[in-house]
Every structure is written in C-alpha cells, then in structure tokens.
Image (cartoon, rainbow, N blue to C red; front, side, top):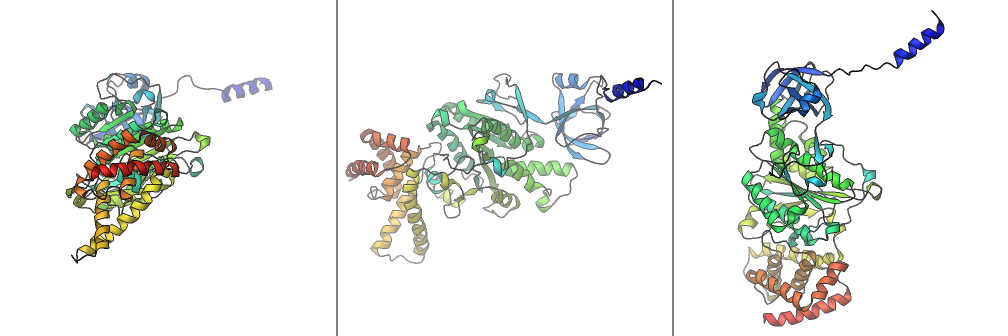
Amino acid sequence: MDASIIERLKKAIESYAPGNVPEEVGVVRKVGDGIVEIEGLEKASMAEMIVFDESSKSSVKEAIEKEGALFGVILNLEEDLVKAIILGDAARIKEGMLVRSTGKLLSVPVGEALVGRIVNALGEPIDGKGPIKSEKTSPIERVAYGVIDRSPVNTPLHTGTKAIDALNPLGRGQRELIIGDRATGKTTVAIDAILNQLNEPKETRPICIYVAIGQKESKTARIAGLLAERGAMEYTIIVDAPASAPAAFQFFAPYTGATIGEYFMEQGRDALIVYDDLSKQAVAYRQLSLLLRRPPGREAYPGDIFYLHSRLLERAAKLSKEKGGGSLTALPIVETQEGDVTAYIPTNVISITDGQLFLESDLFNKGTRPAINFGISVSRVGSAAQTKAMKKVSGRIKLDLAQFRELEAFMQFTQDLDPETKARIDSGRRLSAILNQKNNAPIPFEKQALAIFAATNGYLDAVLPENMSAAEAKLLSYVDREGKEIVETIRAERAISDETELKLRAVLESFKLTLS
C-alpha cells in the first residue's frame, strides 16, 4: 500500500470524532425515603444533576426541557451503584425507570432578576410573581476564595442595633455568629440588620439575602411582609426551605443563598446573607446521611459535619481590589438547648466564625432587648472597621459596663454601699438601659453615637433607667430640631471632631435643662 495513503488514513483516524456522543443512562434499582439507588452511571460525579426519564424514550435534552421534569442530585458514589436524593415528588419514581446523566453540577439562577423575589432552594420562584428572567446560572457548591484573593475587613456594616454597633461591631466580609436558645430574638437581630440598610446610601447599600431553613411558613411570610412594608424588599432576596420541605431542600438552601450572594460580591458590590438557622440544616444533613447509610459519629451526625459548615461560611469574604473589592458578610444563626454552647454544632460553628453574639434567655426574660450577653460576646475583626465616631463613644461605655458588671456581682453580698459605688451602679444601669431598643426599629449609626455620647458624658444622669427609652427618643428628636447640621456632619465625616463635639455639647446642655 502506498505510504502516502497510510499516512492519510492515520490522520483521518486521529481526527475522527463521532457525530453523536453517547448518553450515559442508568436504571433505578431501589427507591425509598427520598433516596434512589441507580446502576449504570459509571462516569457520574458528586453533586451532579440527573433527570428521571418517565417515558424511557427521551433524550437528555428532551427530558430536561420537559414540563414538570423530575431531577435528582448524586451524593454517594459506591463501587457498583450511585445514590441520589430526589428533588421533587418521589412517588413518581418507579424501579426500572431510566435515569439520564446531565453532566452538570447542581446550579441555580443568579443576577439582578432575583432581587425582591422569594425563591426555593433550587432558585425557583415561589412568590407568585411569574418566572425569573435570569440568563446566568452558577453551581451551588464552589471553592471559597483563597488568602491571596482577600483583603482585610475595613468597612463597617451597621446593623442599626446599638449593642452590636458599639460593642461588637461588624465589618463587610465578616462572619458573625448569632447564637442562643429558642425565642431569644436571634432572627429579630438579623432582620433589623437588613432593615437598617435603608439608612445606607443606595450606591453602597448591600444586597441582602435571607435564607429560611426549616422555619414555619407563617414566620417567613411575616418576615417577607415586614420587609416589603418597610421597602427593604427592594434590595432583599429570600431563599425559603420551610419545615414542610424535603430534607434535601433544607440542606441545599444555604449554599443556594451563598451562590446568589457571591454573584454580587464578584460584581464588586457588597452583600449580606443571613442563615436562619444552621442547626436545622445540620439536622437535615444528618437525616440524609443516615438514609444514605453513611456511618454516624457524635450525636449521630456524619463525620463530615464540620466540613458542611466550614465550606459554606468560608465563602463569606472581602475580596481584594484586583478581584473587584466586593464583599459577602455572613450572619449564621445557631439555636442552643438550655444555653449549652458546648454541644456539637454550636462548637463547630463558633470555631469557624469571626465572632459571636450570645443571646440569653435570662436577659430576655428580664426585658433586655436585644438580650446580648456583652461579657462573652465578641467581634474579632469588626472593630477594625468601626467608624471613628463610634470608636470614640464606645470605648468609654465598654469600660463603664465592665466595671458595672463587677459591682453588680458584688451587690449580691451586701446592701451597704458608699455614695461613689452607688453612683457607679446607677450609671451602669443607665448605660445598660441606653443599649436597649425596640424590635424592628434600627437606628442610624450617627444617632446611635449621639445617644451613647449623651449617656456616657452625664447628660442623662437625671433620667431613671426605666425611663431611658423615652428620654432617648426625646433627645434624638431635640437634636434633629436644634442641631440637625451636627447629625449630618457626623454622618458625612463618620467621626466626631473637636469642633463638632463642642457644638454637640452645647446642644446637649440645653437639652439637659428640658429634663430638669
């Protein structure tokens, strides 16, 4: 045979590509409890989406595009089969049904079209406002940005809550855990942080994502109504995986929220995400893991439960300028039982986060709002992002409250107090009272600074602790009338200069006369 012909044949063989790429098809061997065992998907990968072919004749494309298509996600890769969780009505799946591999990881829509909407864990709208017109999708599981791609947390994220912004401040890109027993106001603290973003300029206002995991639908509806009523849904997205939803949806919901938030972060913008709450996600994951026959560990949780939350929370970051400078701030919520922070899930999440806000039932029952224990709460990076105005007024209140706590403990053993000690205790009670505030009533940081400045510098000494809330409202109203330019200066400069302080003291002196 001619050598040239042989050469041409070799090249033709090397360049040959079949016209039709074969589709990978598996068969359902067993189904039950939302879990399906599949044979035949030899090239399957973790977190890959599969589609169940009820007609047994469709192509992958036809099966996906079919109205009411039923999907699943592979979570176990075993020697002779794969196990997947069903994302939909499990009753539709029968043994012997064909399963087609999509070759795609589980993805959700992202982008501006989601703002103002309520979606499920798959990014599908559930608010009755029609389909979401988003052209871009992103996988829900992603590797977090590395150290090189991050920058230090140096921009404040104001929550509107004095007790947080003054004593345990947050920075954009931080992960601050909100932890406490049931019905201690954890969700309220997070929702107030979302509401407070109305006080931020539109150009720097973060996009907020509220992820409801295992919550009553009535509670989520009430939160959605509150946000809509206040105008906060203009910059908020709600991801809802209620208690009635399958465990798979409760497991995926936080990752869906993180993916949506990452989109805005990568656009150079800021985003705030609330996970309410991760203890319920952990329970859902435990349920799935036991059904998948994974070996249980401590408290029956699987061995990778720490990785479950670490790979989620590490996605919160403040990106470097080279990456656009955007940020994703995370407020995970964890529920404790009888204040036990040494339980498995609380200790895991505490070790991953950059600070914790501990809410206590005893404080809540005493009428403290929010019921934050300042003694054990901490923000490890937020103080670096605190405004100069808040730093100036908060340094004094931290010291005074610390002294008050020591004296308060001492008071349990004696009733005979010298005048100086009694004065310090009275001052401490007033400072504790000034940090109280009503639910769903966030206060701009400049007004927070004014109120704390007045309390720490003796301008409210004539006020009884139980009357402090009314006195504070009267003070802020008075300053708005008599010293509006002072408020605007603090807001613009984010600091209290010597000149501004002199003007402020003059206004506060005149206000003090109204109290007497």
